[in-house]
Amino acid sequence: MIAPIDILGRTLPYPPFLASELDEINPDQALFHVIPVPYEKTVTYGEGTQKGPSAILTASQQLELYDGFGIPAEKGIYTEAPHNCIGSPDAVLDSLSKKVETVVAQKKIPVLLGGEHTVTAGTLMGVGCVLGPVGVIQFDAHADLRDRYEGSEHNHACTMRRVFDQGHTLYQMGVRSLSPGEVQFRRDQGIVHLDAMDINRRGIPEIILPEDFPLNIYITIDVDCLDPSIMPSTGTPEPGGLTWYQMIEALSKICRERQVVGFDVVELAPINGFHAPDYTAARLIYQIMGLIRR
Image 1 (cartoon, helix red, strand yellow):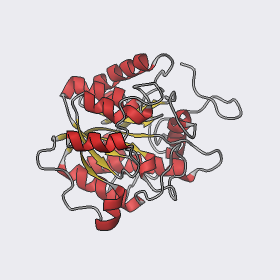
Image 2 (tube, helix red, strand yellow):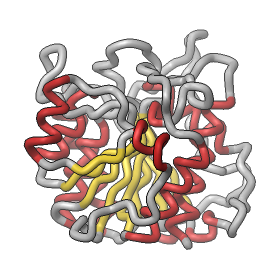
Image 3 (spheres, helix red, strand yellow):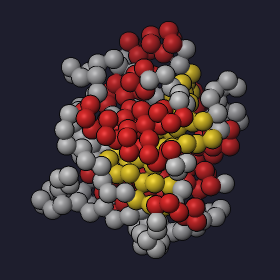
Image 4 (cartoon, one colour):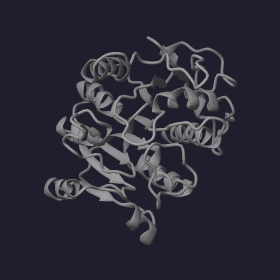
């Protein structure tokens, strides 16, 4: 594939996740399979999500192995080459689906680095091929439930509608920006949610997921779920987002309640020379690995 380039025309680096601390590993020995997906075709405000995976991997070199509770990397972290994002959306999502299907079939956990949120639809196609419908926990400032946007059903604003169409069960957290049509769709389809305003008023509940929510879950995190004060590097920031500790508290409770079969972190649009958001995304990924390990 043709790798994304930075503003100086240099090919972006894709070091293995936490390679600064880890020896090279055979993929068969790794629980976590990191898949960079520098996909960017439908951004609608700020640009730069194709550079997100490279920024996360680069920032991960500064992580410590100990996450405050243990060493998640002991379960093994293998980083694949960046996914080929050249071609039509259907072709890219189909090839991504096949790659994820292979990982899940081996009882490994795919960890997708976006790229725009559209990649989640392809990922869950692959998950569904092996496990059938799963529960999808969406951390996001936006509902992403439009059927089409700007003429495309694969726009990042339509991602969760495509996931819903695949038969997965949705739970939305941190949403604070919806179109009237999305509000109605959530009501009509009974999509369960804990919006940012509710979290601000009442905090994170002790039990988050409904009793009948699927046992197997996939977590998708659009970084704009976090407040712009700690995550400004995203194309469509919304005020009033989750704090770092609200995010970790919610993830901790969810991971205790269910079996995580995969997760992604998407929509990071790095700001040149501003490393904090890149590192925040990398740290978040490693924290989730730790929650799964525990």
